[in-house]
Length: 138
Image 1 (cartoon, rainbow, N blue to C red):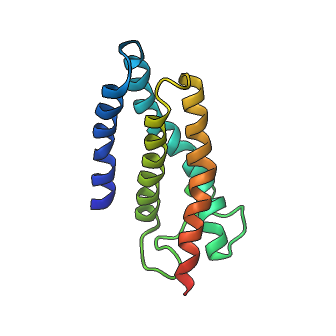
Image 2: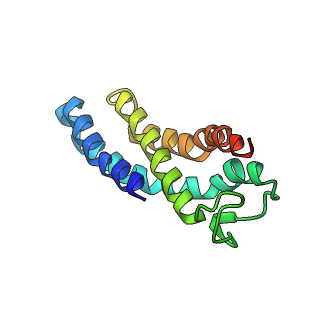
């Protein structure tokens, strides 16, 4: 949980960094992105994480754990609470999306930034996280 709070607190630093690199006319756009990206990241990450990240590792069917419904208290085989695992992975998915938004300042509009955020947090990051989680079996 400490890693989540530390990682999520870095979002304020990312906001300041991005606003510092943005032109004056883009400042409000950057601030709105940095506020909305965690919201979109949380929604789409929760939608896809159990399907693309955790289900292949545990061997459960794709219909299990949809939007964290019916999840066990502990992640199978690890002893880690499922909600703690989800929060930790959500913080890193959000950070992944925010880091890329800094590289896109001035190159894309607001709609483009939100669409890439959905793509990164809902598709790309869960697949990459699966590669990490698949090694838990040894």
